[in-house]
Image (tube, rainbow, N blue to C red; front, side):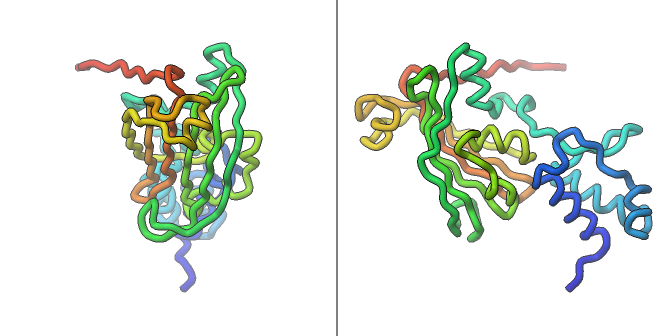
Length: 228
């Protein structure tokens, strides 16, 4: 069945955002412009933009227009940080080492869906900083399938290209098994800070990542308080 005009508009704009053609902050055509382009009613175009806003892909600013949403990292007690930027901010040399990448179909993020599995190690000043295992929902972020993840860590790429609306952190300390201890150059059984994070766009899962940090390499700081 051919989708209605509103759905066609929504899909077209979504594809341009997720492919990276329209970067965060790019102005999106407004109701009147889209109505003219597609030969439809203004309310039809408005419906498409409202759906994109509800999914967190665009921001509608009164009197300013509609813009591609910037990935949120400052609105939570614990931010979603870019490890490359964090290491650089400490004055250390950063390097990402990709060790595994494969496409699969799995229920790991919910109903069976095409996923991209990525594993690698973040390095700081020549020493392992964190080992990462990540799953990305290719139905929500298809462009990552063509991304060069040998040069850029997946978290860095996702923060620049994949807006999200909700996130969950789970933080624990875990003893390193032999494969993890080898990756982090630490003795087996060492206590490693472990962060597991899920993100969603609306109701759709975007990514699930587990990061194990080398002993003594990382700390999480959250500052918060009551506000009127």
